Length: 385
Image (cartoon, rainbow, N blue to C red; front, side, top):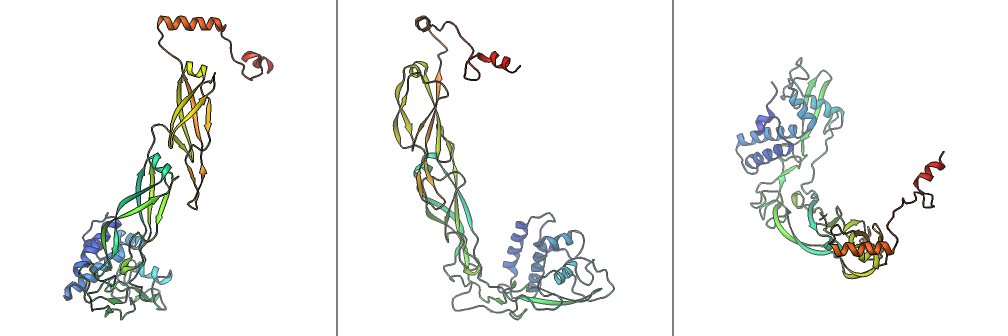
């Protein structure tokens, strides 16, 4: 009968990878030989480790879900169903032929180092357009693994050190010989006692339980340069997760999430805004004060300015931030004019506008030329015949 790997870890069959990992870590802390020397606990620890080895491997887990046993039952009886877990597992055949540890010729991988590099971390911060324009220096709180200050990453109580694993003799792996219809198959897998390290810690550090690192919340200062945009990342070297065994820390990436602005719309280093002006101002022209990201400037509006006119103010956009981190000039500010036509007029205003229309001879209207060369819209159609 195939073993109940899910039951061994105490998880459901549809458990995710993270849930399986958490269940294994919880049991490992209770049953590890360095913590619990009881013989029954050591046997249970080996079962739990084997279950985690299987369920954390997608291929082996698939075999379990199909009713098989990728590790077999350790027996050597011939004539059994080669795919039912009677004498060996399908996973062992896969290991033997596709490069897993051991194989028919032996020659394992050897122990892996206890000290491993840490992972990178990612943190997002929200910034206004004004902050992206000027750059900021902000304190942020991060929750990452840091070096254990009690054992300084060794994982051992002061005055002690790791010892060679009794199960694998320091090799970091254990081998097994099983018979199959292909003959003898020698397989090797990570030692369940030392987890492939080749050594164990007799007296784990009371603060980090032998990990060499602990989780901690800390505050650091990050400087975001002027000109950043939504989705850009700033890398803080060595501020990520400290690795197992006190290994070198990864990097911390701070990603910018730019908030929408009420007035300006961004296009790279350029800015766009819409300025609504009264009909009379557009007709007469004016010098209008305009609020920009770096203060109030005067915008000159020529007499007779039409709706949809675009006025460009060079150098009034955002800093151009290059990939090297340097700023190379600034973008432009594009002002889109929208002329407002009054919708409600009193009697006097109506009279004045009618008088103006008469003075300008604007009582009649004409269709605009479609091609800009005169002739009107219908002459264009006639020219196609």
